[in-house]
Amino acid sequence: MSGIKIDKEKCIGCSACVGVCPVSAISMLDGKAIIDLSKCTLCMSCVSSCPVGAIEVIRQTIVRDLDLNSYKGVWVFAEIEEGNIASITYELLGKAQILANDLNTYVGAILLGENAKNLAPKLIERGADKVFIVNHPSLKHFIAETYANTIISLIKKHKPEILLAGATTLGRSLVSRIAIGAYAGLTADCTGLDIDKERKILIQTRPAFGGNIMARIISPNFRPQMATVRHKVMPEAKIDPDHKGTIIEEYFDENFIEKRVKFIDFIREETSKVNLAEANIIVSGGRGLKSPENFKLLEELADVLGAAIGSSRACVDAGWIPYSHQVGQTGRTVNPKIYIACGISGQIQHLVGMQSSKVIIAINSDPNAPIFKVADYGLVGDLFTIVPALTRKLRQLKNKGN
Image (tube, rainbow, N blue to C red; front, side, top):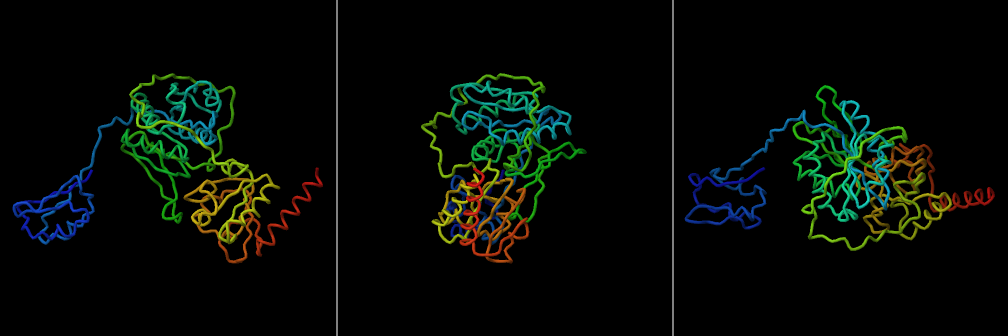
C-alpha cells in the first residue's frame, strides 16, 4: 500500500504543489499545504514540485504470516459452457496432474452450478482427485461477484497451493476478484506452467512487451499461487474411466450472493458456423482484405473446408469483424490442424496466438512478410485471385467425392 503526507515542519507555504496537482487535492491552510487524500490519485506530481522536499511518499508492504506448508493441492476452476464442461478445463486438468505430481499433492476441481453434481464424474475421469461442488439456484448463471465470494470461502477452508482457471472472458472476470479477496498473486494469460522443484513454487510463463519476451513470474510468499491460462496451449487430460475421485459437497452461504447484479438473458453471438477455439481448420484475414465485405471470400473458403473464421487485430479495430474472431496476443490463442492466413503480415502479436498450429499456410502479396517465417506453405500473390481459385478447386473435389 502507498500514501503521501506533508511534513509541516519543512513546508514553507510556497503553494508550488497546489498549482501542479491535476485533481485539485492540495490546498493551503494556515500557511501550510494540506492534501485531501480522498481526491489524491498518487500521481506524485507534487513531490517533484516541492522545493524543500516537504512532501513524502509513504510505501508500505503488507506482510501476512502464512504457514505455506499448510497449503496443499492444485485446483482447477471448472468452467461450464451451455451445460457442459468447457474444454479449457480439461486442458488445465492435464497440466494440473503434472504440477501435482511434482509437488506430491492432489488435483482438485471447483464446480459451481444449480445441478453441478451431474458433471463431477467427467472431471474425475479427467484426473481430478477431489471435486468441490457447490449446488445452488443462485449459481445457475455466472455472476462474477457471487462466484468469487463462493470460491474465496473454499480457498480459506481447504487452502489450495495453486489455483488455475482459463483465460476466457469468464475466467478473467472471476479470478481477478478471487485474487483480491484471497490476497494472492495472479499471473494472467499464461502459456506455460512449471514447478521449481527445489523451492516447490509455481513458475508461470507468459508473453510480455508485445510478445517480444517470455516473462517467468513467481509468487513465493502468498497462497494460493494463481494463474489464468490461454486456451489451446496445453493438451487435454486423457480420459481414464478407472480413475477414482472424491466428491465433496460444500454449503452455499446466502451472503455470497451479489444482490446488485441480476441475470436477465444471454444472447449468443451468431457470426460463425464453427467455434474458433474448437476449430480444426481456421481461415484468417488481415488488412490485406482491404474492406469488410471481402471477408465473404474467406467465408466461402471456410464453408467448403468446414472451417472457422479468424482475424488479425487490425480488422477488429477497424470494425470489420467482431472481437470474438481475433487471433493473437490480445485475442484468442488457437491450435488448429490447419491455419490459413490471408493478407496477414504476421506481426509478433498475431504470431503468439497461432504459431503452434500444426500446419500454417500463408497467402500474401509481400514476399518479405513475417508470416512466411512461420508458415509451412507460402503463396506469394494476390489473395483476391488465389482464394477464389482455391475455393473453386476444393468445391470441385468435394462434389466429386460425393
